[in-house]
Length: 227
Image 1: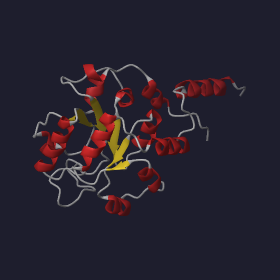
Image 2: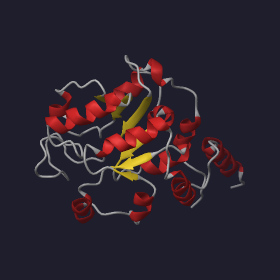
Image 3: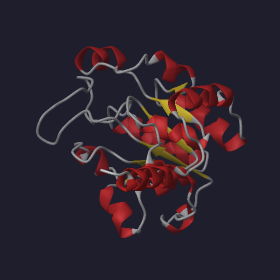
């Protein structure tokens, strides 16, 4: 095995996208939310049984509207990028203004990659997605929604000790927890910054945005070797 870094992560350091030109509204900060796959359009997966929707913490219309209200209060645009087969038909019908959804065609139509976009956001919310390892390279705040932790651990399981990620992330257990996370983001408070950097260095060997060059150089060197 050769450690060269993920080429896709080079896009985290690019200047290709301008978020202000991608959305038809003003905002102070943009938070991207990457929920792990929980509920297929046809088949059910991990999701709390009492939930009407298929996004963590948003179990009914009232919760969705409350999170939207808090985002608006702090000038936050909360952009949810769901798994491609996630069933979000109910929540999309609410048509909220500060809690919006994007899909793969969003990146195609704007001529950017998902990581071009990710690198320009101001914070990440996720749960059990490996996207957190990429995002740690940005140095920006991370929050986790892990209300179904025990159920997920039993059904899906983890490849690493999840305590490591919990230690460097804000935990969001209720819609009201978003208020403190948004407030810290707007005010520039970042109490977990040093812990995130510690975890980032444990999970990423290269921090320079040159992984593509390393991979290409390595392949060229292999091709030039005598057979």
